[in-house]
Length: 69
Image (cartoon, rainbow, N blue to C red; front, side, top):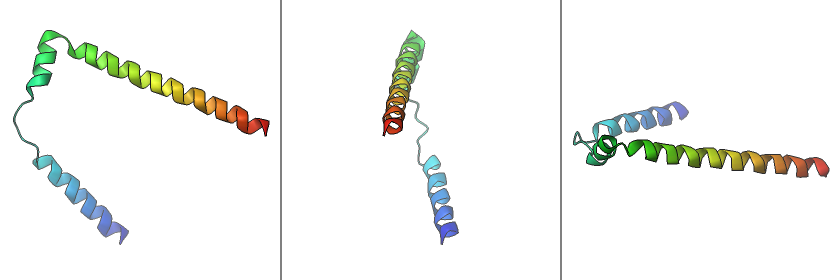
C-alpha cells in the first residue's frame, strides 16, 4: 500500500511540471534588468538568518529550562 501511494504521489508531482506554462514572467526580467533583484535576494536572506538566529536562541533557552528541572 505504501509503494502504491508513493508511486501515485510521484506521478502527480511529475504531471505538475507539464502544467506550467511557457509564458515568461515579466517581474523577474524587470527586477533583474534594474538590479533590484539583488535587493530582494538580500532581504530574503536577512529574514532567513534572523529566523534561524531566533530559533537557535529559543532552543538554547529551552535547553536551559529543561536542565534546571
